[in-house]
Amino acid sequence: MTNNLMPEVLISEDEILHRVDQFAEQISTEYKDKGELVLVGVLKGAFILLADLSRRLTVPHRVEFIAVSSYGRSSTSTGAVRMLMDVREDIKDKNVVIVEDIIDTGHTLHYLISLFENRAPASLRTCVLVRKASRAEVDVEVDYLGFDIPDVWVVGYGLDFAERSRTLPYIGVVTPDN
Ligand code: IMP
Ligand code: MG
Image (tube, rainbow, N blue to C red):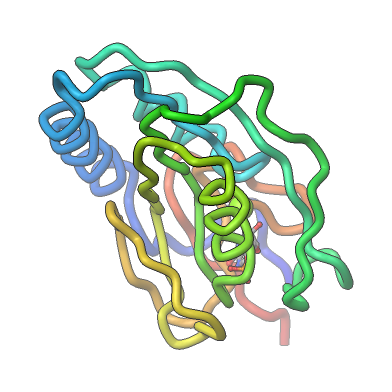
């Protein structure tokens, strides 16, 4: 794998930000007068989406983070998910939106949804920027979805390849070297 300096553009910065505007508008409308809203960003990949989304919301909300990691090789999901850092505040009776960068096999988000459902939130929804639909191993419901993409490795806008390219403003494809 190579060429992390200038990966080929899959989703441009304009397209991403336009979609984030739409997320914010929709979430702001739907959570108006609904009680406490908590956005939970999944570290590390969702940190940029969470920052852009939260600053566009016109409803009061809090921001929390959770960190999880898949067992196994660093860039491939094995299905087993492990908690590295939990949210700090109790989400019981709160309206929670999990903010995630990408769904690949679906195991990570599936784990987080079960985890949070057990904590009795007032409501629980998910906001995901990109999804590799063809890779799904478990069904996960996404309430706010940005883009369906093919089975390629993407970087940028929070997403990395071995910790590189996270801060690219667009989503690009990392292609095999040879
Ligand atoms: P899942 O549990 O298989 O859905 O995978 C979720 C995690 O794998 C994501 O939160 C990412 O951290 C990582 N991941 C999967 N595909 C990609 C990709 O194309 N680029 C960067 N990270 C990815
Ligand atoms: Mg992630």
